Image 1 (cartoon, rainbow, N blue to C red):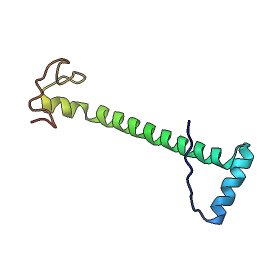
Image 2 (cartoon, rainbow, N blue to C red; image 1 turned 60 degrees about the vertical axis):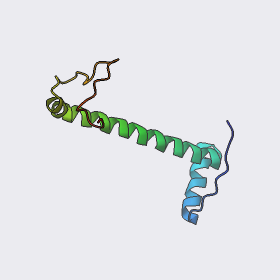
Image 3 (cartoon, rainbow, N blue to C red; image 1 turned 135 degrees about the vertical axis):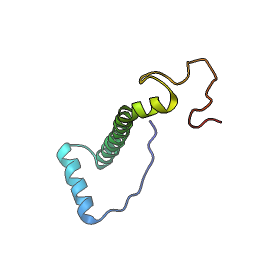
Image 4 (tube, rainbow, N blue to C red; image 1 turned 90 degrees about the horizontal axis):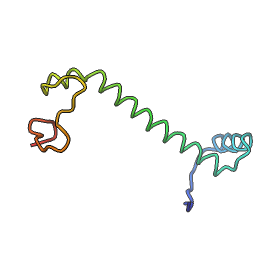
Length: 90
């Protein structure tokens, strides 16, 4: 995979902490920063998915009542085009 160079400015204490952590882990500063970003991106994505799932579970009955469905049923049968009355449709 091709690499892109980034220039980041941080205060000296943050730079020293990053150097020490990279050294403790036995990785380069580049690898340490890359791992932090990948970890953070994964956590954010997972947090979003979990929050969306919790939201849908919490409000499933509200959506079902609004659109005349039984909880757990799809509002439109796959392969059909009858979306009238669903949010985001005209």
